[in-house]
Length: 256
Figure 1 (tube, rainbow, N blue to C red):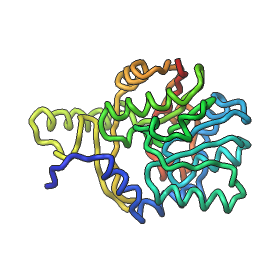
Figure 2 (figure 1 turned 135 degrees about the vertical axis):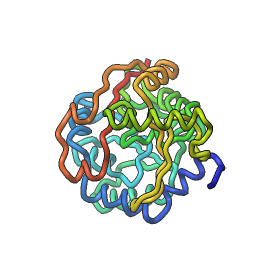
Figure 3 (figure 1 turned 45 degrees about the vertical axis):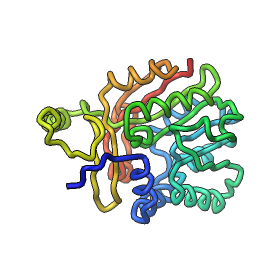
Figure 4 (figure 1 turned 90 degrees about the horizontal axis):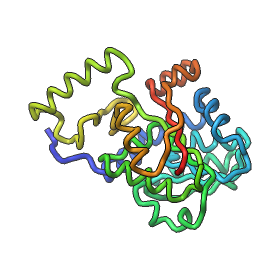
């Protein structure tokens, strides 16, 4: 079995893979914003004229959903070039050329001058994008970077999976903990809570935290926790959304 640890370079390559690009492009074209996303965006981003930043925009599903909902001062970035090209193409198709798309790494936002030179009224990092960054310190670097480009009091909305969200999930992670304790886990993984799997939509790295981990990460990176809830507690999603994405937890925080 491969034993090299998952790196950001591997995650980028997985997102640039044609199978993954096609999967996310279809979602951008045909799914758009989830009902739960729309509900919380309207709650935390009520000013549609405010400059907003979307991290990990991928092929543009959320970005174009925001545009179609009336948000007009949008900047979006991703570190994978192929999905980003899809997002730009879709924006041109839909007359949303005013959206600014940037190629940037969430863990090194201080190196992206177009972002550093702005101060955003809010940020989004949806569809578990933050959790697809390998290594907790790297995820904290992304949270610090977003804090650095957001105005005081600005909201941040993001999602994670939650390894405590069901009895079956808790049982799975108890078994996984035994593997880590005995050194028999997938050696490519960086930390307990990581998964790396492959299916018909491509290869995916994901870190699944518990609630305490995210609360600690927010407190350590300049964000004040304001809200969290499982998706099912916010809205009943369509079959298309449920087929596209498993259960997740929404988080909202404010820049300190």
